[in-house]
Image (cartoon, rainbow, N blue to C red):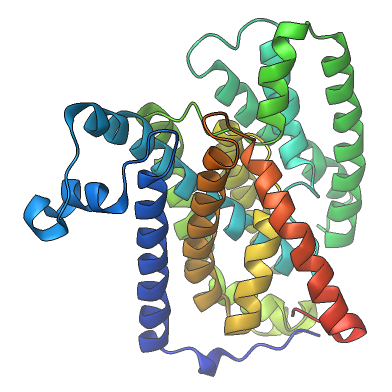
Length: 348
């Protein structure tokens, strides 16, 4: 049984943690904007924002173009993706009552990957937004398939949803392996980078494609924070308190799938963000989703921005997929968590 302590959260507490999260995102963004094959430095970045006199630094025209046309859209898009993955993982863990749940578990990400790789294999990847659109449609189709199978007998049981998602994920993974094995050598590099998370092609157009829908989805999920808290008390209690359990679960699953599909369509498969961030935030703040969701979104943005900055600098001027960095950070985190908490570990 999950514990829910709504009285522990006040408006002042939400505001304080939100301000702290915004500051963390801002600091991560400044660091990422100044980091890369062409170092710009934090003084130069701040000089463009606050003015040369206040920051004590400035950029030349070439550096200014790098900042505005390459670094800034990448950092903004990375922040949106981090928000989406962190909140999706948090909501799915709460709905499924599974501390290891994330978008990969339900097959949403593998559906997006199948759509993206299919478009690349067919030669349509060079067209604008073909790959992101194919990935988004693949994610949505996968969620429709999972819900159709799991809810075929009327009630939407979370155990059936989870098992169906695992099976669909395994099947789609086999199709992805088939596409990779049949693809030409010149296609494999872009395919593999997409599979492990690639934000190197971020442009302002991608933010316009993903941003509005992602923000709407985040707002809807935050509006359901109270319902998530009550669902944690158990299905019978939730029904007694006036929550329409099946409708609420369906809404949360659909919006989470929409959010995941949007962010994965432009970033590729980036693991562990939806696992690490929810656990860290729960350990810090407790179980109340009114606080967890906004702070978790900001923490996810800051975490992925920093991870992407590392991906750009570890073997500079070359890059490694950002998913490699998040996995390298995430695996030791869970090993440490299991060793320190052991059988007493109950994140809920």
